[in-house]
Length: 190
Image 1 (cartoon, one colour):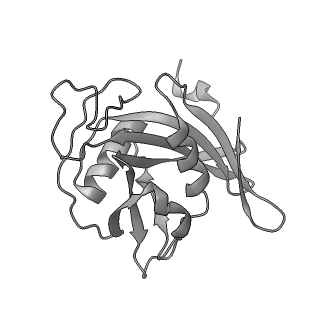
Image 2 (cartoon, helix red, strand yellow; image 1 turned 45 degrees about the horizontal axis):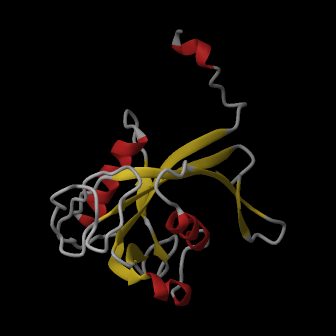
C-alpha cells in the first residue's frame, strides 16, 4: 500500500503520541515534581514521559524518556492507552507503561520476582540504576500511602490507581480523557 493510501489528511482528527511511565520500587512509585519554572504542571507530580519522536515506536520512546529523565533502565510493559480529547482537531494518544525496580537496585537472579515476592505481569527481568538529576524537575520515590496528599497532575491519580490495581495477565486498559463544560478533566475507562 503506498503512503497516499493511508488516508492521512488535515480534515481527520489527529493524535500526538506521548508516553507516560509509572515505575515501581516496592511500595513506592517514581514521580517527577515539575520544576517551579515549568510552564505546565509546575510543582505538580507526574509520571516520567514525553513525546514520541518521528521514526520511534512507543516502547522505544518510553525507554528513551526513562533514560533521559532518570538515568534508569527497566523492562517496561504497556499498561494502557488514553485518548486525550484536548481540542476539536488535535488530541493526544497517551501510551501508559509500567515497570518494576528492585528495592536493592540489583537484577533479580531469576528475573521473575521482586524482593517482596511479587511477579511482574510478563515475567520480565527487573533492571535498575541510580537516579540522576533531571532538568524537568525533582525525581522522588513516593510511598503509595502518600500519593493522596501530594499535588498530582490532574489525570495521574486515576491512571496510577488503574495501573496499581492491574494483575498479571490483565490486558492493557483503554481510556478517554476530556474536559467537561467547567474545564474539569474527566478520565473514562472502557
